[in-house]
Image (cartoon, rainbow, N blue to C red; front, side, top):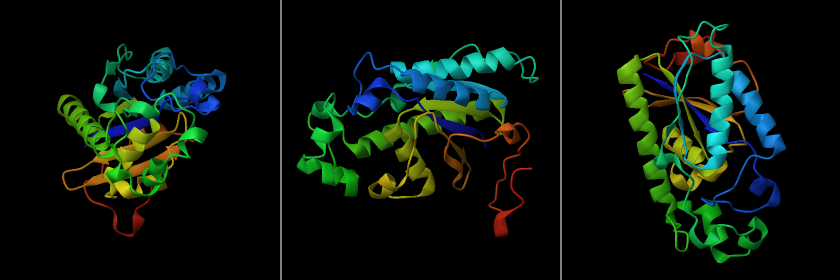
Length: 238
């Protein structure tokens, strides 16, 4: 089975302003977000990646560029099979279409009646003039699984690839992998420039990590995917 590393974009100017950016143009990483993305890129540079897939929105493309730059800069030192020259853009993992909520402040939105439904019953939410959260999850999970199958077919079961996306998108993908109902996905935290790891097996997904922003990932270079869950927890990543 292939391994997908889910990366949220770094912190943006909209994040610090408390604005729901949605799909608005011109939302870029701020200084802290660039530093977060650079650190995350260094973490991933030790992993023999076979591809990077990104949401088409600028903040994700910026974050993906940090991954590519770190990987290609260190590729010879780390015995990778050449550089990683291109990033594929995938509309299926773009930000949720928040409709009329886009561009409004979080403080303002928290006063809306729909806010409490978003928090407790997101599967019932359709944003005014926008997308339902159920549709958001369905198209993002489908896109990730499609790319994962393609990378495994092309590169084998040890393939490791990266998907750069958005907080709610990654939370919904993790909820699906964990077998959680969408109504429980607000229990999952996904911070800026965080790394989460999922392997899709024939029987079920295996969630390896969620919301990490530090730590060595070099074990992914030699970690053979296990087809069955280890009874008792196993020996960990050696």
